[in-house]
Image (cartoon, rainbow over all chains, first blue to last red; front, side, top):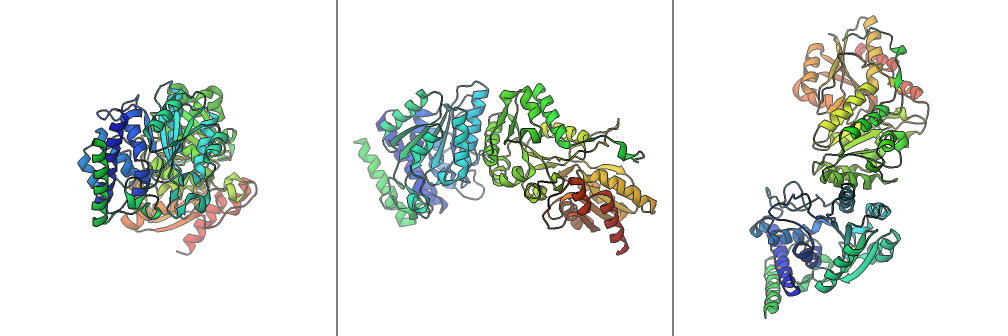
Length: 277
Length: 321
């Protein structure tokens, strides 16, 4: 997919996010939208996956350690063909397989159940270790939040991954600078993030997480990095693509009301149309 | 089955030994068996596996939460991981990781928890986990095995391996009498073992308390109290049919465990009986208290979990009925 196609797909993913959260009347738009370009790149360019065979043994694995941004993952999976896009509207409804946080038991394409922050990266490390033990070529990707890395378990996992030189592991930090209670540096600063990961024996790459050329270059560099895992610090904007949600902590975890929903969808539609001209 | 020999002459082996030796056997039989530890390999006995299969023994360092997550990732990739630590840290430190990363997705992770209960001894209360069964029992889909001697420990590890889904196995530090060395010994997952048939009372015991309850029941017999003794090596799923049948037969129930009376075997038996066959139950165990430092046998005596303590508690309870 070329950059223009990726940008168009990212708009669809954003529409899916806003639509599903509006339908659920609950959810986390801010961190789903900030990572929308990353989700799009992963599922339409990077990951070796097959929607017709979600359990394919040789597939790349993706673990959404920041599980509350499931709407972004679900939208990418749906547009990639893992399940009907129409089902996104069942998010968080009683009886739906689209749980508030990803459930690997029932969502095609979800490789790990996550939601309790700090835990997903350890599971991703276990998957990367399994690949090494079995001498398999598949790669493992985990996405963490910049608030999530306040969890100590993240650094237990990072220490282990660096110690074991798991170069088949890529950690993506969605650095949108906001968590529920405010700016990450005000709540409990995780900075410097890149130096921390380097101290844990990671190769680090810092990019604009909304720039597909930079995203593409970073994942290619990660693939070429041997002997150590890679951490990609993706600088993003929380709520990206919906003007009133951008860089606003209050949109971390609430659904748009009807009028807000229509404004948001109109904005995304116009931005999408602009890409087609 | 009557226990008619002198139990004092039996060899003593800690159940964690059976965990270690059986892991090594499973390692030879199945390439997918991997063992995780958190810097306690010598104590949990996973060192036996590590020596033979260094590439499949994953020492996670002192990081139990991460170990649980790595075990989940390994299980999701087709491995059969046995994660090992002391009961305190396996069930306590890593509780939420076990809940959300292992039990919720129903991953095939086996948790080998050694050094359970007050028989840890000298290390004291911080290391004496009397709450692990309660924690693990509350998790949907989690099976719990608590073997009574080394022979049962070996059988329990094999049963856990054969079972598809998460299993918590509880082992001890203390060397305890090996009494299950009978030719007809058979471990059935989820089934209690009637060691002694009786008509007056039923004693449901688990773990190292089983052998103590054997002594106690023999002493009770001398007083004319005919106790039925049942070894509950599987705490979950509980053998409810056997609990109800024996309670119906004797009409008076005692539970004995090296664990808090809150949430353990005693609670499980009470829950079953209160719903299906209301029966008076006396729970013998740790009564909402922490342990303390001291030699294991002295602690078991102080807290009334040896044969004499069990015997006395049953006598006192029956006198006040």
